Image 1: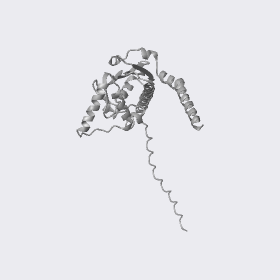
Image 2 (image 1 turned 135 degrees about the vertical axis):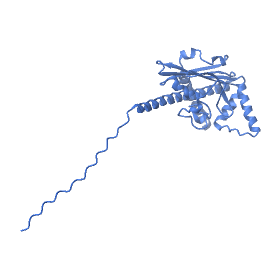
Image 3 (image 1 turned 60 degrees about the horizontal axis):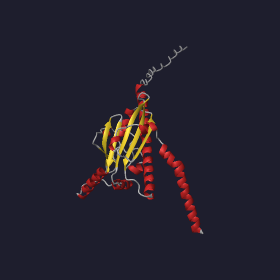
Length: 281
């Protein structure tokens, strides 16, 4: 009887979780940051994965001009400024909350690390407007093999943190995998504000069987959660930096506070004059 009760309770819990996911979580996931105009627009990097099996486009508005958002994109990456997302999952340490001048150079062909062994390749750089990263099965396998060869040769190679090992194992196991990751900045309000649009275009094997479908759904939601946190992180950092810069400029323009002149030293008081002595009789 107890076993039957446990089974019924477990089945009810699973059914409840499935219902919550279907009617609350999934609609939120599929709608957050989604704008039909963004989804329909052609963006830089779309041609990198022409046969994508999954395309996701999300956007949000930032209260800062594109030139104030761009530096946060340029310095992204593992062992760089971070990804501004859930650092316990995709970083070693914390993402920066400041712009690092040493990380402000980026060019097509550069590598943006996402772990000690693997990295995205920079495919598009349009300063102040677009940054597109790319990875595929061949690139990842070459990077992993190069890191392994360095280890075997006795070279000092950073150990992969535990939180990143699962991701590294997953990417090379996807035959034909390819992905482009575009960050596009669109000016709003005559350039005073920005719409940040991120687009993933991914080619990956179709799920084979119910278990693969469930795993694919879980993987997709995980990517969404990381991207959402990242977009909010970029927004919050850019807006906070702009506010801080405005406060600094305001104080710099204020006239210096004048100290009151020192009070003149008071002259020492004169001793009262002595009364004349009375004559003696």
